[in-house]
Image (cartoon, rainbow, N blue to C red; front, side):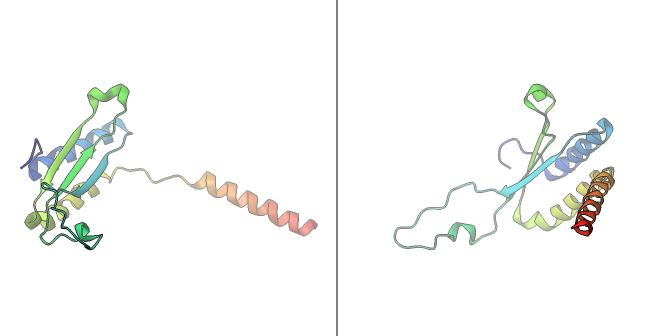
Length: 135
């Protein structure tokens, strides 16, 4: 693997820990990103070519998956950064496990309270309906 990326198994273990720490604190965010990993830039052919050719590579490429807890600059010491490289032949198995870990990590999320917003909309509608009756 390139650089200091974690193995896929270590990535899942630490990602679970990252989700658990967010749950214990009662707040916080976990940012997940992924992108195609290009190790060697493709050679630019001379002459007229397809402008979007680099978006359709001839061979499958590895994917870089990152996770961070997104701590601000003030608490940068507490910032956790994780990354792993997923090879093309392991992508299907990786993403099925990735979905399970993410789903388990999001299980403690609270459902958003929209009751105040609904009440405000109902009040506006009622005020608008009364204005039409008067006019």
